[in-house]
Image (cartoon, rainbow, N blue to C red; front, top):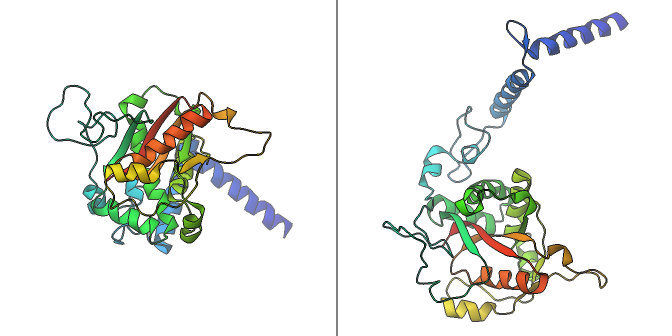
Length: 288
């Protein structure tokens, strides 16, 4: 029995060494591990076939395991409408035509906002609208991964190039605690955590919502601003601790959809006024 165990160990050791080498003998540990991982992925796909998280159609067994293609079929991925320049330099609203300089849209013209600028990855339409709706109202928490993946391109915006984003802080727009209890989670915080895992940018919940305001979807810009005035505050901390750790920090404020920017403005105002934050850049999955 002992000899059999010794032979088995030797065979496993030889197999491991061979798997770490590429013909004609040069060590290729990464290639060997990659080959083994591919075999494991194929076996896993055979047992548990992957499906598009939007249309539920089957994904090819050899489709990517990272990025949007790991979650969406080709048709749904192509249906996403990326936001491309020219865009409003403040809120990121896209416009047709050729713009040769920075401009403000009608919504931002003559308006002072507390955030520095906002970036959205895609338009809130088609497959993306369905994903966000299923996540928030269908209580499908598993969709946080694909939405974080869709949000990731906002970090490649030219105004963030050259920044060491690992020194920034991801902060979610908060939900009122009663509404969060009813939903079971805060969608912005869930996306924050997944994006943090993907990028190494730290994330923290530092804001709170002081009252319930109801839905904002049917309100005009002025009504939204009035409805949201004073509803955000810094999270309460122990009496002998405050938010000095945020002073001078740069914040990436995360939400699922940006419409008029009223919510982002109020959050950024509190962060700068009460915590001494230096800069607030708003990043959202979609632009309404």
